Image (cartoon, rainbow, N blue to C red; front, top):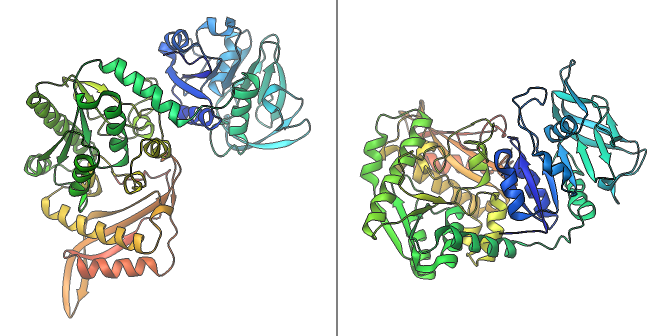
Length: 518
């Protein structure tokens, strides 16, 4: 599908490449990410109005490091290089890049604007100083012909460079992250002012484009969609159903690792409201038997991912065979499992939709939300008419309660956690705080402590509570509850949930922690 009013983003393995796409979309411009290995194919397919070269972990000084197709620089369209992208552009166009002898530049920095350029249109002026976010070891020490420095920093004399004649720009910092306050506006300037795009792209257009892509991918084939009950899989199911109708069958698997009332709510919505074919599989025994004795978090995720696939394949056979498996995989899931593009990114944890897929899986994947963040999925859900009770739900991991029980997962421990989690979320809703929190949940720890209840001694479980705020799930801050909230919740849980005698609160941000515990 062609999007000639679009930006092509070439991914060199940065952990934050998708944030570039996010900023472009926020400017009202369509964008697609392509790994550097297949960038030419994407370029020929979408015929973009501009190109952005992402950051990445490699060093341009190494002969084995990734490169951009040279023809991109001869296409006559604007190019913006970010961090590694700037260094790459410099190296490929006749400049020079060196390994920084003083250890590079990391974190908050300030750039001094030396002269005007297209990126600064209506935003920055000569003589001003602005905050940016640096993260680089190498640096450009000689510019290619035609380039001039337009801003400098203490650690980067070529912090921003420009070749106005060819509309080529390079920035050593990361404008896509929130720590560069004007970064989104710089990217918007590139997309709209430099590339000349209108900025009128909407989520409705994304919906239409994805529906067309799904139809093209699937053809007349049958699709099975794994429903988890979360907003991601729900939106994916609605979008695919809109595209292919009754070619889609949803499978909702209850492995005994769901929250209280989850199954009834999901089944009711999809059978009652949308009339989407839905198979409700009771698989508690299968999952609990397989999780017995398993304590390693990665092993849990991989078992759960494999077992979901086993169930889906069995259900596919029952409906006469399905060629495709649909999932609500999002970008943060992907980047924490493997690179978005298969490029050189670091695995943080295996997402069950990604790292847990067995090689022998007999179905092809349909993942229409793979490029989106959670808040964008919610916007798409509203566009599709999904009720607020689903659109606004806190994220819930596919492996469910199993990764909120460090150590062995048993039916008893799931039941304890389910009850405690329900109390916690009920109190959050009663306090009117649910929509202010990105994600809140309880974790049942593999720790017992001594307590006193009545006049007797107890030796029971410790429950940890977690609540964070975030915009996209890539970073998160701890939610600061009113002072009377946590004592009230702790009292209710200890009183109402048999097996828990102590409650603690997790104050760790992301990073260094993840949002989930496993």
